[in-house]
Length: 311
Image (cartoon, rainbow, N blue to C red; front, side, top):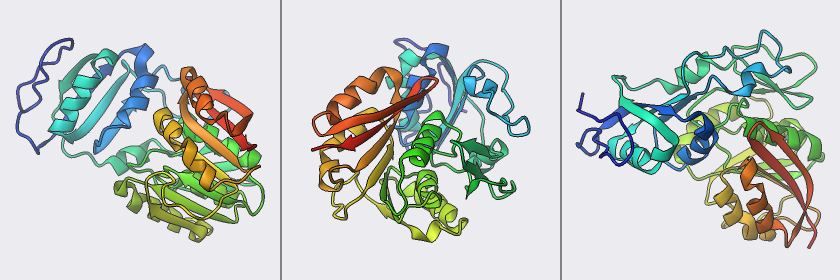
């Protein structure tokens, strides 16, 4: 174990000085800053992240069936980060204002697949969707999506994924050509496919997610209609779409706005999620010249927007 300083605020982040090595850090989070931390941590190339928030309203959501309700964790809000030392140092330096304290922990390389699997028993999304792991039986009278939890963000339980899937359910039309930007685990691509899309193009810029996504596609009989490709948002995409879904960070949604015009015709729809409530206005501003707002939905601190191209 390398020496470290577990207090924050103008103090050097002395988490091992040997570059190229891996380390695990437990960060105690400020309760009012958890959503911002969730948004910002996605920008760092960590090998594993676990965020534990006992105060998350999801645990008390009245829509849960009791057998599906996740167990509410004890203790203070915190995150376990695993990754290269230099990446961890950057997180601790850049996100200090969101933390109360941190400490390096003795952790073997975490089996993140196992860790997510332990807490994922399936969840109903929207009115008709049920997202479940292979060891949980499909739900009767539901459109079932089988998903292996993994490093990729998105098992259906996070608010942004649930908002996106519910919007897909409401706004997709049979036969729609759908593009899923930032597809991660493939959960939204699979939702689009089971809801009746004619084709789905899943675009992801992080190759680390590909093996998990490909496995998820293979677990579903309709997964073969989804084409997974590596790409930078919509750059280089030439095929037209009827619908785009993007559950990513607001700055990236804003960057993507002009790119949508080359693939989405007038009357095409776009679902934007991954947006903290206080950042809705800036995302809308980036799209207002060519789109009108059809719907805005929210869940706790997160929002999703459904837009239609008008010019």
